[in-house]
Image (cartoon, rainbow, N blue to C red):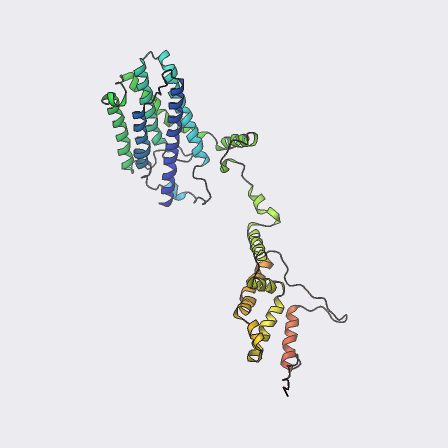
Length: 375
């Protein structure tokens, strides 16, 4: 259901943006080109188009049940764009088709159709509405798959909304002539409106067959030669996966570990200092912890204050994960100490610790402090 809701939002956006682009450009251009400054789409007609776009289309597209193709599809990343490249391709392609049809009927229709002006305006309005109605069916898919009728029979509300839009448009043309500023159309005029509206579906098939790579290449060319034109991020050149993995010479996991270590380095404070000291000198940190546990209650008040839970816990519990992370990140926190005697081989920290433990058991360790005579 989560993927179905996400797709429902995208379907509605794909439909709504197409209607907005076409209606705004058609109304503006026709009003500017008219000597009376009158647009081909009247205000009351735009209200009906807005009702189709915001109410009926939303109910129809938002109620599509989940399909098998959605369940088989991989989940989208949370950084994925809401309007994908395929959706932009469909939006721009359908907008171009609808604008071409509307401009040809409005500006060139009187010359080859020989209809009166009021009938031509009604024909443009009727054709525009039916292009949106059939575009509603085409908007049921937001990918390049051609089966736009998948699951249509299970969505009864979509069929009801589609019937309401068709019936409402028929009533407006035949009955609402005075309210909607239209005149009744003849049979051939209805045929022109229905055929041009139905062509939105074949045009959608051709747009889906058009490769996305060509659209991306054109967008990248525009972004490179016309940098002032803003382009969406997903239309720009994508980084190669191998480039991301080899960035700074380490992989993604190692890069995250390095960022965490740099974050610890930038922070100052007692606990972070103890973590860094335990990473650089792990053996000394373990020795201090063991010596404090052996001495127990013979420590002075200053030594007890230095043996706070923070220092002991951070030295042992927090220090070891830091050592492991540093070793994975390529650091070498444990450095070998050169041997001071020329006649003996270098010893590892574990061997030094074992020798220290043996000397403590034999009683040859450091002398205990003698009590001072206060007299």
